[in-house]
Structure formats: structure tokens, C-alpha cells
Length: 424
Ligand SMILES: [Zn+2]
Image (tube, rainbow, N blue to C red; front, side):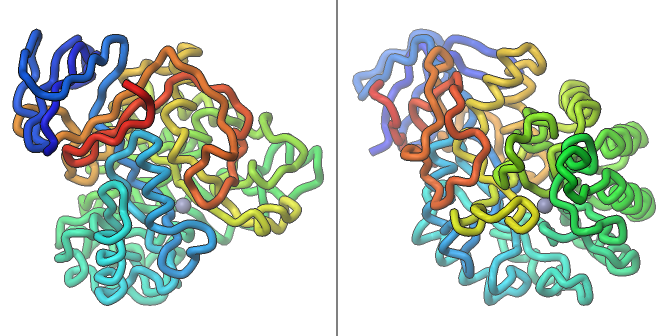
């Protein structure tokens, strides 16, 4: 059974690190203390970091409908190898996750195939078309649905969003918003900035994001409903969210690893693996995101893991689909590019991967006695190169291939069960 002792772990919990032993019996953490002795399988974790395993509140698992890009099995395996224990899938599947039949079918697939805990959002509007609200009150009764999102599309109609926010408030659920004002778009593929100008590409302006965020925050002021902004990419959005929080609104926001690490200046050769929505923005936007993460305006890091098949991404940047994979290497990349470069503290990153999203979605994200063991174990001394052959996703659309990262996953403990990636 799942009985084992973790010795000398550098455990992160309650916002601090402490060297402790962790006793796990029947998959439950039964003791956290110094010098626990027990005659059961024992792992010496000297020098290793242990945290609650990560929660990604924004992934595209592509199933049902786009299994050639990713499946629940392959996407959740990527999550497992990334140190994640929980992911929340977006509703832009086919059929769309906008009714109970589709959601029940998804739940069955999850029970059969998933390697980590998998939840989903329901769409806000039928087939993400923005014309008709889903039956929110009915759908939210399903335990697997954690909120509502039309991710991939912004809800364009002010009246529709007004109604959705009001309903969300009534049923105490959350709107997870992909903010994109289509009246600002002209078919762009990267940020409307230096790189777009230099390469004569149509740009995507910042207003397309922050205008819709501003509209939504006005609605939250009125309804006081739970509201979360997806993949924040602009300086203006960070400022809007900071003010809304200051005003005491029940709002939150996420940033993705790629927006926290890269800017438009990192784009090379107009390669489609630098194409995502929202796009990589300017240096000033990047600095605003880092500031937002450091001052707790942004309390969630979510990957927006968006697999696409090779053929699709092998098109010119104007024609290739938006999105990159990200869940398997999120932590090592954040550790390498943000923590080791002294831009963000390790504690802040870990909070944004655990307690941050847990708080927003009302999930468990802390390590405590009595809880089912959900832990990840990293060796921060170890480095490795991100190679295609090691990618567990079905797709390889990432701009980080060939990059050397610090911080290797040693094991992931999912609901009490230990899965070892490295010899311990
Ligand atoms: Zn999105």
C-alpha cells in the first residue's frame, strides 16, 4: 500500500522552507516532524525540494475532438512529468463542453485515462459563439466543473457578459475570462510592436486585451461575482487588476510562463512556436507582469498548455494556429529564468503554482497532516536540456526546445501514490 517515509525533505509550506520528515500512511500525510523513525520503505530526500504538487488552472487537453493534438491521457501525463497534480481543462473541445452530456462523457474519459486530477470548465456560451448562455445553474451542480470560460474567445456582447456575471454571482461560481475585444483585431499574429514592424506582420494591439478587462471589472463592481482574468499580457491589464484588488473586488488573474519569461524581442525567424494568443509583448509589459507577480496582483501562474500538431505549426507564422505546449517544463523554466536570475523569489513561484490557484478555485493546495499526499519532489541542483524525445505531450510546439533548465522532477506523489522519475 501507499506507506512510506520521506526523510530530510526541504519542505515548502505556509510560505517557508523547513527540513522535515514526512510520514505517509495509506496515502495520507500522518506526520510532519523531525526525526520520524518507522520500519517502512524510506526515501532520503536530503537536498531535495518538496512542495504540494502544482495546480494548472488553464490547459487545453483537446479531447474530445482534437485527439491528434493531445488526449486526456497524453496531456495529463505531461502534467505528471511537470510536477502537477491537478489540471483544469478548457471547454473549447468538439463537441464543446457546454452541456451535461458532454461533461459527463468527459468525466468518464478522465476516470479511465487521467494520470493526475482533472477538472474542467463549462463554456459560458453555447459552442463559444457568444450568442446564448449555457444553463449555468444546472451545469455547476457537477463536481467536475469548477467555473465557466469561453477561453479561446472573448465574450463580445456586453449584454451577454452582464448576464453571465450576474448568474455567476447568484450561483457563487467563477467566470474565467479570456479577454479579447475583436473590434480591435485585424488578423494579427504577434504583438503590434517592434518585431511586427520589422517583419511587416500584422500586429495584435494591447487594447484588444485591456479594453475587455476594463469592461468586465465594471461588471464585477456591480455584481461582486468571482472573476478571474486569463493569461494577462499587458501592462494596462496588470494596472486594472491591481486597482480592482485595492478596491476589494473578488478578482484574480494569471500569467503564463512564456509571458513571464519571453518578450517580442525573443522571437526568432518568424517561427510559429513564438505565436500564441495573447502574444509575447514588449519589455515594458514583461516588467509589469514581473512586478504584478512580486506584489501579489497576479497570484496564479497557469500554462495555457495548447498543443498543436506538427503539420499545423509548420505553416508560415501568419497561418499557423496560436498556442504552445507548456505544462511539462513550466517549473524548471520559471526556476531557471526567474528565480536564478533574481527576478522572482522561489516562494512566490511556488505559491503561484499551488495555493494561488487553489484559492481561486477553492481546491486544496497546502501540505498538512490529515490530507491526502499530493507532493512533488524536485532536485534543484540538477540541470537538463529540453529535448523532443522527452516530451510527453503528443505535440512539440514549444520555443524552448534545446534550452538548458535547472531543477529536475524526481518524483510526483498523486493522491498518495508515488511515481518516481529519477532513482531516489
Ligand atoms: Zn485564452
